[in-house]
Image (cartoon, rainbow, N blue to C red):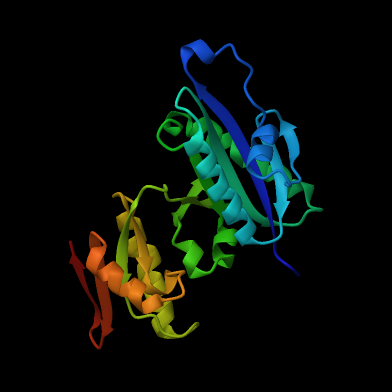
Length: 237
């Protein structure tokens, strides 16, 4: 079965005192300014859902929303909450669940809107379906309501480059590398302003030059390797 993605979006407006009496824009109207061709189903004025064929479509829309928020003036700023999950367009229960998650995050993260105008959460199943180049955009798993999700790193975080053995897919080396990265390195970085990135997460066409540039220019580099006695690691700052 082809994987599809359900996206639920909530929007609120952070305005100055003199702007509070103005009517706030609906989420559908805001999305139409970003991507006019989107087929959006408006649930309430501040919430909507849509269906996407592939994750890359979601990524383009998220990037477009970030840019749209940056282009708005500070006195009348829109803030977006986004939930993305793997789903079926015929499964209305999933759409309802996505909208419920958006409502929860809008309530719980209200005080962060001024700092993080775009907050994105993807479900565990969605995260597992991503390739490493996109997984590195998201934090370790947390719970929102009764659902396990991964929150997207803020756009302004610095990169922590991770040098590690990779190995082929499904090998013991790869499994160990993934375990250490997900269980130890990523959670450690989440307490700082750094986003960990491994070599295979680079998305450019020239991987080796990108890796060399990362080693020379990234503010933090974490190196670990497997030996006969176990894990050896080193952190350079």
